[in-house]
Image 1 (tube, rainbow, N blue to C red):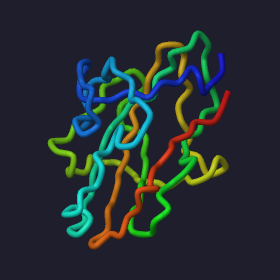
Image 2 (image 1 turned 90 degrees about the vertical axis):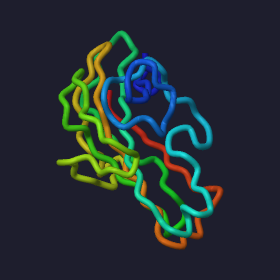
Image 3 (image 1 turned 45 degrees about the vertical axis):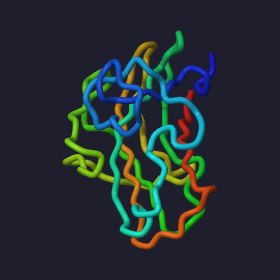
Image 4 (image 1 turned 30 degrees about the vertical axis):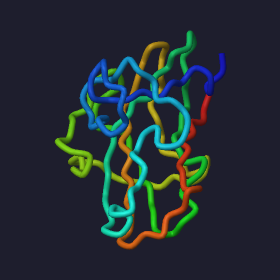
Length: 163
């Protein structure tokens, strides 16, 4: 199997969670994150674009394959095209296969996290090896600037490199 087909992206927030907005840490969900617009962070409403906001979500990357994946690196394959919006990522503090501590609301920053913007494969965040069935939490932080112009074309795509 290949890395891209083996690694699944899952909500946090407990085994039954199916909502990106409720992915605030806690146990891995049994539900994978689908592809498409607004599948993790809620779309930005006009009042949020005017006021600005900071949002924090936790997801899990899980090896659904039958082989171990090693030498992994996490980075953004694409980032927002506008200058008003920024996205950062960090490994969760919990070890592989452990439950990440939750936050109380989508606007609450998780403690102890070091935010990074690895925009290319060569600047990827070192990611732990994942044996079959292993999972690791990551946090995402989206900042919407005050009076953000935004764009319907703004989106973020995570990528994982390695073998």
